[in-house]
Length: 409
Image (cartoon, rainbow, N blue to C red; front, side, top):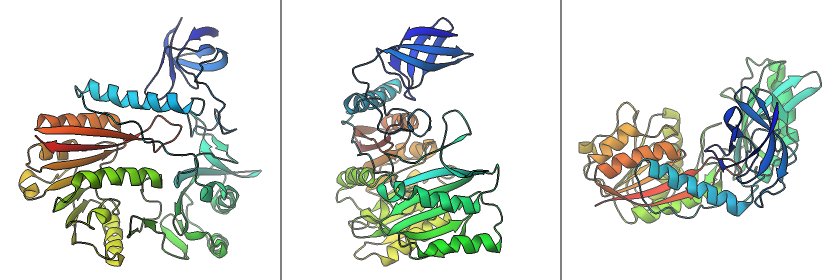
């Protein structure tokens, strides 16, 4: 059944919201104020046609948009898109009873995403490499991507060749690709148990000058050089397939906010330190305690610290901060805390921080909802939320990175 409706607003995932004869529905790829025809099926609504377009509607830059599920907002003009993201942060904070200054969104340019996870499946016609269709397990083959860094986007054909060697019918493999400063770091997972012929064929790609490392399900196929990411005089040494900030410019913006807030405070404790994104930068000014649960990440941070020059002392501690947060007595004596938890946030650790006397906290988050929850805990514990800066690290999606600064009142 089709129906003509008006889009009233955008939901938190970037879909248009409308009232239909069947009730409220979310309509992907629509904008507020538009009149559209939708097809209703159960609790879903699919865009059929835009009858009256918003002045903020633009032509998507990618021919795969609307089929590939990687992006949801390429059809929205940049000023309106950034304004919507800013408003979403303000609204999320308000829902937690927080009224704090929210800076304009820090924008990132197209072609800047240095890390991506692509999916591939082998068919009778060869390997299909791309991203999943929205709401489906089907993989949409991509020939271009305006989001990806050129170092990755220009090598989609090569990545497809690699996937064809590893893939088996009906088995999806993932290729986590990082455009490191010194070459591509390609980590394949889901390849199963490779035979000698497969490993030899993959090894043949070792002659490609722009590939630094290739791994298959944790096993190194070849290592031309250790992938590195510059962090201002030092070098991160990321794990194969491991987490790093997805856009270098976004990471730099986050780091600037952290360093400006911490200032000359010493010593500093870096919670959820990962492989050292903030630790190495902080250690140029002050001794740092880096706390992380994953041994491999701590080993990578230790290696990076040993190669870097001019750092203050870095102490490494392995600890599960969800189950065993750093307590207020342990935080005694630290002049600043940097905290960068995963999307689930860090409720327990923030409760411990709220009960501490640490003067400054710099918080990074990839989830505004859990950030607002944790910020409320810190505020109730006596911290003042000084500023929140949204960073549009995930271009053309509803996702955001946040940096926030807190001080003891």
